[in-house]
Image (tube, rainbow, N blue to C red; front, side, top):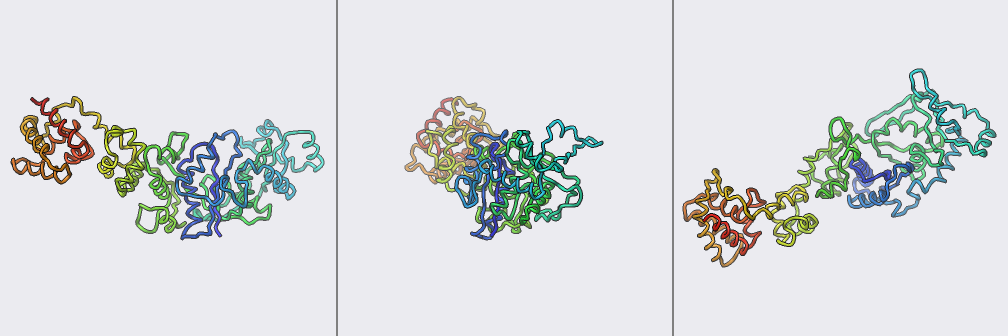
Length: 479
């Protein structure tokens, strides 16, 4: 049975790279409809100085919103908890002491100042392992005397550690290049270097999926597995997500998180779809994929070795495809928070507005701009009635508006079909091009050069009463 995990630090909103790691871990566990595969959430909060209040809850909410339900985790429980590292402090202490006894670690009583003074001729730090030669009695005496200490990994000075990564192949590191990591800090808390190994083993994680920043650190972790005599999991390291060719996508530099993009009006399902494509491509030539399709198509062979660049333009296109597939009712319901803040709020039926916008916005965040014309009517510039391409002029508008007003007033049914027949029929009857009638009619009722729809759609949006009122107002201004 596959058991994967996502182990974020609660230091803020879940960024795009982190969510992609979670997504791939979820898809790998659930691929091909494997209902036995398990996806676990673990909160790694050992870096106490960087913790952000409520960040853990944001992680829970984000994963659930993104459609990545975890089988075990802090808020859902499971057989291998606790799932928050700060609640596992005693577990780490127990295994750290056992590792010392096995020779894989040692108590280090060196002060920070002494450690900083230990450098080689090139200015590179090298750690003094004199603590390895302290007797058991001396170690116990120093601990009893309250001397501060850390527990460090005892990495051999010669040899090579290697492993086979499922994406990058064989990765090897000479042991002399590795420092003796701190495993337990002076405050008793573990570092990531130690806690992730203990947790992955105890939680029976057999596939570790994480970013390439851990490629060169993994050999150190494998030494810990070997010291304990534990089976080493399989590794899958993912290329970074970049905002351009030189810079990683990072919240620190103002790049958006998943929640930021939701607040901008992107759809969760479109975001997950796009994030899946950041470093992976399916064998089938398809880009728009729901979660079930992603689980069916996801394979390790599709994961790229190269960094992926976050392209917001492509994301907007994909999001627009999801919007175009909505019914007006669904659009109106899901876009309501944005419609409520738009000029349409309290004035127009949202389903009618939705019919105008579905094919004309890429995100719900575009709604306000598309509907800005609703507040632009009063005192609009009559020069907008002039359009050389459409052969429309103010004089022509002054001539045709009275007759159009009469015909609109006489309509027995104010429908799309009736308006179409009226306007097109009038143009044909009078020998005008369609644009010569449609342009002044639309400008007269909207007062805007650009609108999300033509003359008929705008007339339906405003309704018969408002349409007639505005036609008459424009005519009066032309007098």
